[in-house]
Amino acid sequence: MDRARNSGNQACLEVLSHPVIDAKLAVLRDRNTLPRDFRRTLGETAALMSAAVFRHIKVVDTKTQTPMETMTASRIAQPAPCIVSILRAGNGLANALSDILPEAAVGHVGVQRDARTHAPSFYYEKLPSELDKRQIIITDPMLATGGSAIMVADRLKLHGARDILLCCLVAAPEGVKAFSDRHADIPIIAAALDRELDENCYILPGLGDAGDRFYDTL
Image 1 (tube, rainbow, N blue to C red):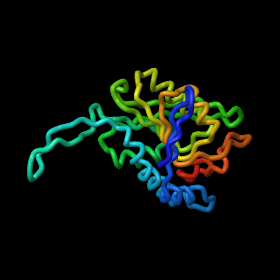
Image 2: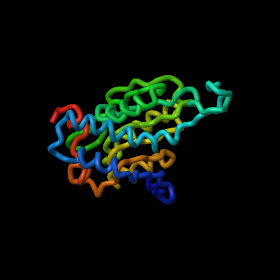
Image 3: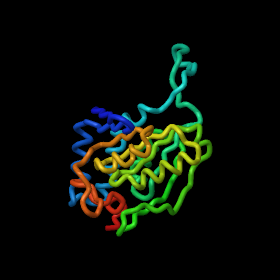
Image 4: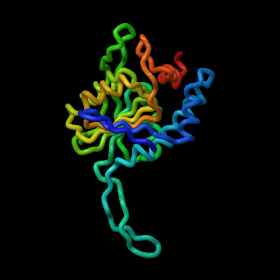
């Protein structure tokens, strides 16, 4: 896996280098991939990414009795981490990560983008307690302008969250810069760093609107 650290006040961006992730991304990028296959492949990709995402999770040593002897083993620190999905598209990543770490709480923040200005606007929030004590994983498949992720990170910090990570499938350089300029303390883990944004703030080459393709609402 490749790790790139930006200089100055830039956050740590980790772009995963994995042949199976790359193959899964090719399916997600293909305009002819059916929604059912898109949903399945997105979940499979998130599962592959989970090793890098969960590498950041804190554990505590505890005594465990095996069938043979007593040993020191690692268990997830409490309160358990929280996965925060940016609605709607973040659900695909959040669900897959939650399947692997079911003890994690799951929160949702609704953000929608204005079609004309491309600016994000908040419309919904449901979060667990003790955010100030939990590790937080934000899920959003597309880090385009960075506006939605910035808004969600802002809100989480207002609730006291301090240990946050952002997980996305595809990122644009513009979004990485905007997000890390605002939240240099939050690492970003992405499956791919694409070339640029187009005039409508879609990622190129990208994979289109992840939410519409996931929910078949094109």
